[in-house]
Length: 159
Image (cartoon, rainbow, N blue to C red; front, side):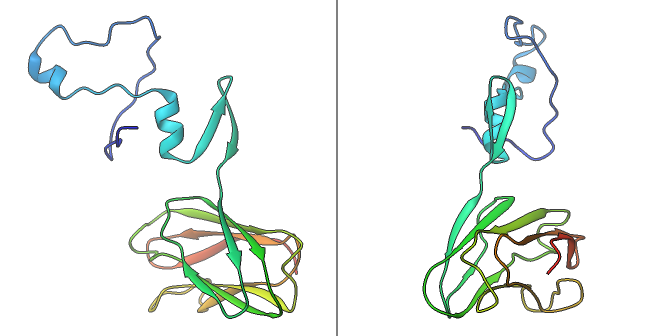
């Protein structure tokens, strides 16, 4: 897929319509055509039969004493715990580097009070004013949003 430049404007055009500008070669040189599949791929969703059917998560295997940093451009991270008791530290990207981004974290039944996922803000940033947010219950999760300065928990299951 071609990279879609930031700020690109989209207009719906039927597939049978010729989108070549008849006015100038310069206008044509600055024109690109993207399909709905290109757009879906760019934002990690899958479209089937003209309907969004799922968001594609990043699957992360959490281990006791392990750690990782989110560098992928995804909106859902799905944790699976492997190993004994402990804490797995997962660091968010900088809230200032990606303002207004929302990320959801989910887990299956392998996470518990003794197998915890600690979602951590980068140095100098916070999550709801704290350095981290802990997921410590089966089938739990949360959603965080960057206001451009810090991460804010905008949704969480009761613990």
